Picture 1 (cartoon, rainbow, N blue to C red):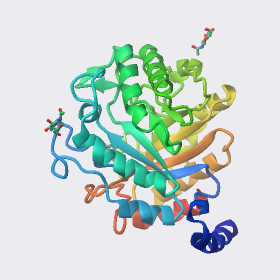
Picture 2: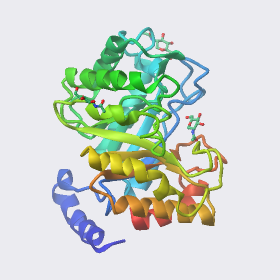
Picture 3: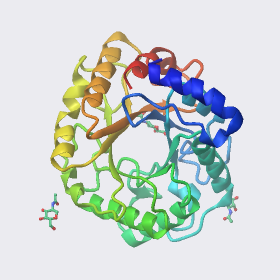
Length: 333
Ligand SMILES: *[C@@H]1O[C@H](CO)[C@@H](O)[C@H](O)[C@H]1NC(C)=O
Ligand SMILES: *[C@@H]1O[C@H](CO)[C@@H](O)[C@H](O)[C@H]1NC(C)=O
Ligand SMILES: CC(=O)N[C@H]1CO[C@H](CO)[C@@H](O)[C@@H]1O
């Protein structure tokens, strides 16, 4: 624990008695944001709408308490578009899903952390690539209205668009931005993603450079990229290519962010629980902390109660990444 945290903890103890609302978040020391994806509400995607706590779940709030206590301050919450707004993108929300979703998101923000609402839809609705941008804008207006007064909510336009051509993605992301702002949600950050699964290593080569022209009247767009460290970058292996693969894979995207005066976040990353990956994760995060003029932070994939023996399981108390990788990351982040 660094000195700043110690002082903050001490003053928090005093403040807690007199004025709980004045308690400050601890948060990461080098990044603006550091956190974890909290999975569950997007599970069971072959069962639509599916049943709460059978096909899908909202993760336990105790995990948020534990991780906030360790200095994490951002949690990405994957949801499904078809569950929150089921009939059509211009339709209304379903309370069976909305009620536990809102209470989970509000719990996270009540702890002083940021909660990312992440439609985990790969640029698709009911399996079809979204081309109805007016409908998508309406979807976002409806969803953002729910959280329009909560400044600690972040809107993540859509998870990992892919195989839809880079030319269409700016339309999709701009429709999201327009929908969010039309809802009167003006204080929140908006995370935009690119094609090719929003990979940082392919950001420039896949043509996501055309996202530089997105506009936001509030000027709070953050470019969310994903970066796994295995050979094909898919996040399916415990092996990392080399100890320096992370910084190598981020180099071109970092240069693009700088050249275009943009801010980015690694919204998903992971490596296996082994020596080579520990070095690779250390290298990538260290590189990012040297470039905090453009990198706001990073989010591990993944937490949540249903991962079991998953190779990147960040769920306390015994997830393999929680026990072996989080401690070294906390020293850097
Ligand atoms: C909401 O979704 C549930 C299933 O999750 C369904 O049983 C219910 O009929 C839906 N409500 C409305 C108003 O469509
Ligand atoms: C952004 O827009 C300008 C003017 O409309 C255009 O000249 C430029 O090529 C665009 N850049 C990208 C990356 O699409
Ligand atoms: C890289 C990775 O592990 N991706 C997984 C993310 O979670 C979804 C379910 O939420 C899986 O289907 C992906 O394989």
